[in-house]
Image 1 (cartoon, rainbow, N blue to C red):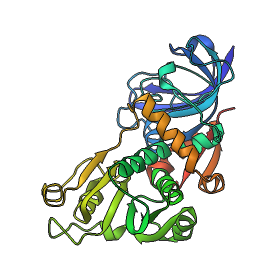
Image 2: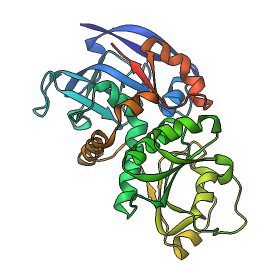
Image 3: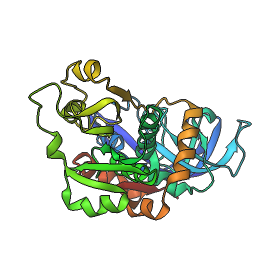
Length: 329
């Protein structure tokens, strides 16, 4: 059988992408073959499509760091033909062929059964970004964050895929969400998603003059990192936590130990790549419980597989808001 895929080739240091018809014999090793229905476009996908960061070491390569679809065949007793499944992480789309294809072959250990109440398209509207956002929210709740108007939960990068998903999920769970964005023109959209307040990211951009500022936040899902994260740490309330989910602002952290020693702040690292399977199921089940289908659709843009490569420069430049789902059928 043959299938269509977005195939990356590298010549010298130049990476090119083209829709290509391939045979099943080109699929990588794996236990389960999935008819891919949807994937999504993430910041990491933009880097891979542009040949940045050396995230892909072996070409030719099929990118796409997540996928959702239906099992076509399986050598894994846990999955049968027709099962709906979702896959995020495990470096799919980096070291293993990913979701920008009509067909994928993967390890059964990497898959999660799609929870009742979610379609495959909705799963990719959530995607890797939304999965990481819910990981962060769950980690904060497990470290004591409770809903309530006196418990402000800061979400940074709120106009992006991860941040907007965090606003959606946290608002649905009853939290008082303060959304930070560089696009205040999107304030009404963020309020509609679930934000109680919207602030300009400039409030968090200045380098603090002191290692501690006035206590402000009861929790934070940070999708930015860098100087923004350093500023946030100085404003956390005593004993609260920051779930660090993204590196758009860089992987450096110019801070001191003072917030951790004198205020007992917890810095929770969120890794969606090697997250254990049982934890993945917990995260996806919680997503299915709280997600508002209409609101999820409002932050989703759909593109065809053949058009996804052209969007790579847009997402790297921060011009893509919300979630982009990729139709693979």
